[in-house]
Image (tube, rainbow, N blue to C red; front, side, top):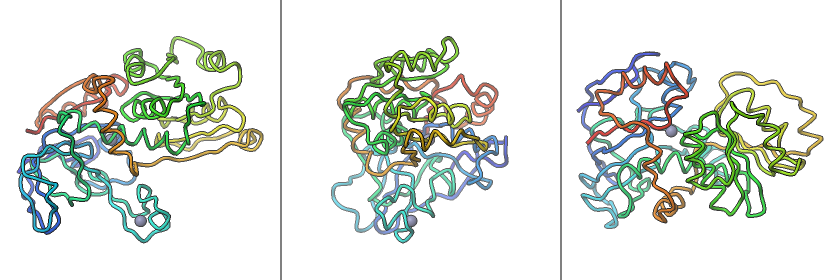
Length: 338
Ligand SMILES: [Zn+2]
Ligand SMILES: [Zn+2]
């Protein structure tokens, strides 16, 4: 069957791989949609230290169940549309023992530490499956990035009384906006592109700031009575925004980092102490798939607005190259596999 692999940094190809078959407890699925995200671009560029090559991409997935292995519960039936979590958990490391399987020390995410689902078929343990009869396959493929954003809101203990600044409105950042807004918080979204900011409004941001056309720090302070936000969620991964999160957050605030830093960051560390900050990392997601599915099912906005481009498998190599040449211009590329 066909799959799309990054064969070396800067080089993607359609390759042929063996068809998988479902063992006991597994289902065989036909892949329908795969979303590409910033981490796939990082892999394509050779800048993801967790990836070795060749690597089949694909961790934001919608699929249709094709065949059931032995001992799969009746809840799962051939023909159902599903999405599934792309992570693994060893069950034994300190994270897993603490009930935080999303941060498993030995986690192997599809398309990162092991081959992903950007192929015609895949096998999945039934425990990883989630279904919704109401959502389209495009929407099911958006559940994973939104769940990562929802998890960041959970890590920040976002509550109704909070003002939350979300820096960066890619797929995960928009999920953080939606996650914080659905907890009742007032959300301010920050990005450099008006298109992403208008999407942020549709998923729940009450105010937006374009960092290229305004003094972002001043705008944040004006909107928070000079105090800064109670929570800052950083979904960019750049040194400047890593620092701004700490500089702008309110005293006794919470800073949540989801953006993967691509370089070392130097800090005015006295801010950590002086403000008595909670500085938190957020990785993958834990229990958020059902929350995001319920959020999409409420139909407060059309998740398909997030998709900036739809392509076929054969077009993935060129699309990755174009994205690498213009990283800011793309929010979500959706691959139609079947
Ligand atoms: Zn992703
Ligand atoms: Zn573990």
